[in-house]
Image 1 (cartoon, rainbow, N blue to C red):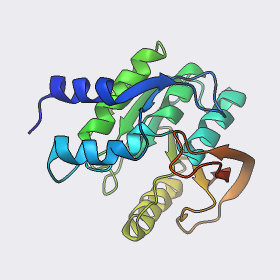
Image 2: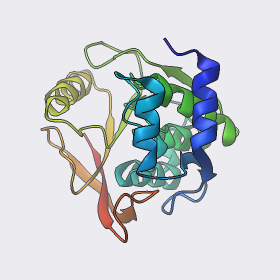
Image 3: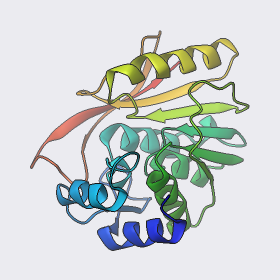
Image 4: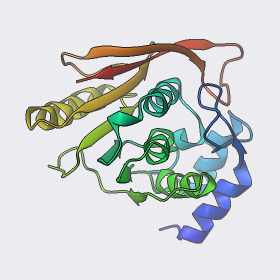
Length: 215
């Protein structure tokens, strides 16, 4: 088990504070070197969780979701928000900036949880970060926000089941994705459509459609 101070040191060493193109209101600690950080994380963690530093990037779907929340603060104002698969917590930070009562950033990667906490502090807000896998749990939130989470086939089913069960209980879902990602099944309604790059870029000059959906 890597201690928290070592994780914090790793994040601060291999990232820098950057504002994503679609959300200049928010600063995030993003990878200094987009490709190298995958090897750096592999060496640091030495197997298991944390090898894939997705938290070190501002993904297009997360950017779009954060943009939509900032532009429509009534969606989150006064609500207890779950940022599921939070990564950098860009959407959760946007929710706090827009008046959410509280935000829980849930990501099973301990480096992501630490990055979420650091990013929140960087933006003058505070959130609760957890590494508990909530996909099989019944949670007590007023709103669930999800950005760019379905990056593996099995997640499509697990996230879909979680979303469906919470939607059936009357809990609204906001979902941000990009055109190259999978989306769980469901009667999603399109709220917004943007163009945004992944930052830092893994492929030069590659812009994706980034969309926000509601269930």
